[in-house]
Length: 150
View (cartoon, rainbow, N blue to C red):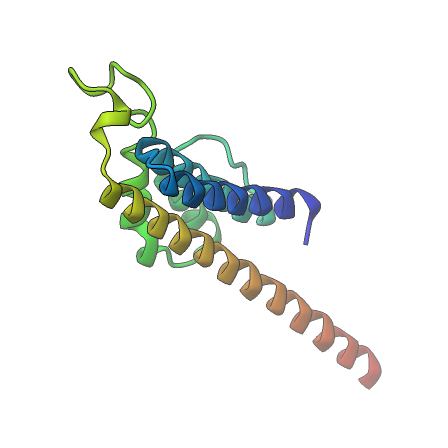
C-alpha cells in the first residue's frame, strides 16, 4: 500500500482515538469535530489509494466521488457521512449556533454517536482497502500462473 494512504489512515485512527479521550473529558463539541476529521481522513486515504483527488471537507461529497469513479457501494455509510458533515462548522465557531457556544450545545449522546459513525466509516475504508489489496494479490498470482503455463 502506498505510503500516503497509510499516513492518512493512521491519522484518521489517531483522530478517532483522540475523540475517545476527549469524550472522557466531557469535550463533546470537540469529540464531534474530531470524529468528523477522523472519517474525512479515512475517506481521503481511500481516494488516494484509488489515485483520486481528495480535495474538500465534505465526507459525503468525497464518498460520492468514490462511488462515481470506482463504482463501489457506499449506501451503508451515507447517512453517517451526512451526520458528521452537518457538524463540521457548528462544533467550532461561536457564531454558528445563534446565542449558544458550541461547547455548551453538544451533548454526551451526540459525542458518542459521532464516535460510532467515525468508527463505522473507518471500518468501511479498511474493508475497501482489504478488498482492493486482495484483488491485486489475486491478480498477481493469476498472472504468475499464466506465465508458468506458457
